[in-house]
Image (cartoon, rainbow, N blue to C red; front, side, top):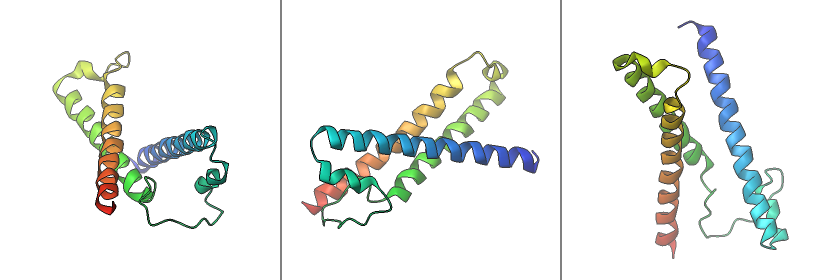
Length: 125
C-alpha cells in the first residue's frame, strides 16, 4: 500500500465521521426544538458558551464517543479483510455483506458509548 492509498482512506474515513457527527447533531437539535425547549437548542452550537449543569449529558465526552465509533468501525474493516482472505467471493462488489459488517460494528461503538454514559448517569443520581 502506498502513501496515496493511505491518505485517501484517511480522508474518506474522516469525511464519513464528520458527516455522521453533523447528521446526529442536526437530528438531536431538531428533537430538542420539537419538544419545545427552544432555549436549549443552542447547546449543540460550539461557538456559544452555555453553563454546563452537574448532570451528566450524553454528549459530554465526544472524544470517547467518536473514538469508540472509529475503533469499532476499524474492527469491522479488519474483520472484512480477514473474511476476504478465507473466502475470495467475499470481495465481490455486488455483496452487501461488507457494508453490513461495517455498520454493525459502528453501531456497537455507539451502543457501548450509550451504556457507559448510562452508568455514569446512574452513578450521579
